[in-house]
Length: 425
Image (cartoon, rainbow, N blue to C red; front, side):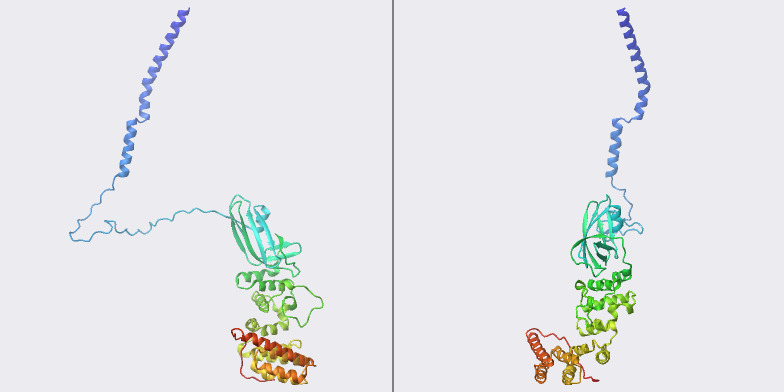
């Protein structure tokens, strides 16, 4: 039995071996045809290497004369001109594609985080962070309103910043208070969905005129939102002080800034007849008296150079009763020769109103001319130190003497001009 099992196993092994040999003879030629031999692979590789190293085929050339100059192209000393239409394309530079968003939408969607701190008037620092996985270009448009308690400010000039993911940038913004009751101090602000439609036209004009001072833009904004009177924004004293005191100290500006604000309002289409600053008679004469704002006042009010004397004469004789005597100071500053002759007569005339006589004495000192000093001392003696006019003359003489000493101690600067003799008083 055991022998039978052994013989059966041997026969099975022989049969399997014979089947394997038969299959191998039939499939081996097919396998050899499908896969190249190592010798074939080596031949292909050597042929490819030889092809890359082979020189380009020679181009047949005409014979070169014996004394001919060498060909600059053939000897490599120059390069051929490029053929039209085959210019090399610029290399592709790596860059980022920024997703655009404005501040409010970015904050609402949570992709922009904003930390805002402002002073309630003209400055704000905005720290913006990109919380999205993509680069962003965040825009802050002029007219955007920010709030902090009862304070409200508006962005005067647009700004833009590019933010990479998880990165922050700080922007310094220019703002203006929308309310004269704003508390001017450092505080945290937030972007508001409210709008300031009244100042839209002004902000569009301001975008095309970046040279206008921020103080002038602030004055123009308050003129549109609250129509503030002159005494609320001017640094000079008002001839008609208000019954109720409104503390607007933080928003008082120079006379030139008020004129710049009115110019901006007029050029952006605001009706000037309803603007309190524009219709106040004190502003015009104050602006004309002030040397730093005089030229701007002449342009704004349309006072030609050759007609300036007519302006002062009209203001003195026909101007607003509360500001007529101001014309004496303008005459003293810009027509000192006339003032030295005219003003002492006004002081000595007893029929002249005391207000004009006092103004004439003070205006004499405003000429800043040495000739006015003995005139003031003589008036003090004539009027007597026991009188208001005499005391004013003595004080004016003391002021002028001190002022002349200061001017003599430093480089002379021509501040005022003389004028031809004119009459009419």
